[in-house]
Image (cartoon, rainbow, N blue to C red; front, side):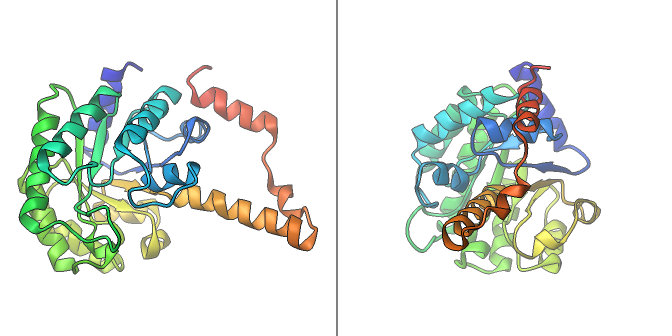
Length: 277
């Protein structure tokens, strides 16, 4: 699939129905997810930081994130979206430049948070948060090709504002032209329903916290257009490392390794996911 076809396919996925957007952290995980039927992929800032031995929250530079995104674009034939935190800039012009650079490495979309990358996860002031999305939208529209701009209101997840403020921000981001709206980790299904009822543009839901208890059909029935998993699959992988190595070194047991996939099975997934079949 050409890059142009990927960009159009990613745009089209957001026009109707509901799809799951898995988040790989390297070429191997990207190809595994592609082989298992993913229609598109997205980077995860936290999962990428983990691969570098760093904590989340500003643990990766813009240049590193762009290089990582380019690597995932090259890994499979699927469209890829970038989880680019606050756009690696506080000012609107800096965010716009990040969008242009994201497009240059072949990304089909990008998400921008309203969170300052510093301890405590403070939110940008309302007016600045909206101006940052407006600048990102203008940069995306200037590309002359499909690019799905996702605007995130992260304050509910981070504890910096309440649901009412999160909805106010999403509505302003919608007016500013964002293609997709995203309020990560609402307290529950009822709060997610309020988010969905508050806007007309497509909404992304994160399969984390209480939302993990819902199924894809249930989220689709609510009106969710896209479901991302963030760093959840990477965290499951790290849990497997924790549990298997703790059993080896603590109890002297290799029992957890019985669940390992065979090398032939993994090789098959990697070949299929690369498009080389």
